[in-house]
Length: 73
Length: 263
Image (cartoon, each protein chain N blue to C red):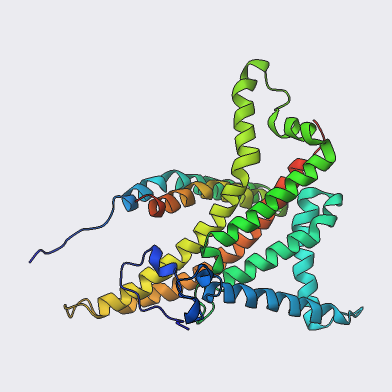
């Protein structure tokens, strides 16, 4: 009996690689927001919208990877 | 009506397919028209309609509790999104944006609602319709403001860039502003709800699979898996609110881009 067996598609590994870049990007977006808020607490409300916008745009890349992992067989 | 699918452990795309509520329609082109998914959409629409009609039926100067909730939701979209992003003239888009926000929010909320447990937005058809709607709105607004060719130039030509980079910039701007925007809008909402449902399936069904494992040491691990499922449900709550907000926010940004003066 085999101790462990891996089966499935390579797509999930591809998705893992595709998530690297957006992961770094989302980290940068929130890091920049925290830094901006720490330096200028009054600007928190002003920059929050742009944080979410940047987050959404960066996140789209990871989600495209996820969709393609399922769509491409 | 199958509320809980007895699916096998590795959940896949087939976990998102539901049989028709009327068994007579199975196999006909109408099979997809009356499923659990469409039922959830109809319920969401009914809830929104009834709630806002009842809340605004008899408006008071000192708002009642229902009226306060309805006004807070509308105010959040009108002041927090429409007015902040588009500017003073954005108030006329507030009804559309508020409807969009509430509709997406409620439909996303089905993803963690007990016994519903799947968001209609995890079928890409619904996000596509919403995104095409947003695409039509921001293009129509831009064409009405700048004229057809004026709008195309407005959205493709980058003022201030040197002439020799324009041949590269114009196609990029054209594709990203006029073609890819609705695609990313739809895919973002769809993929978030799809992934959220998938995560919950993995942890819940994974718990079942671990519980049924041969090894005695693996059985207790299922509790950990189910605990993660509960944790991920709370995480999903944050994601679904954020996605409804982001969809509305980006629609408002696109409208603002169409309305902007030449600069």
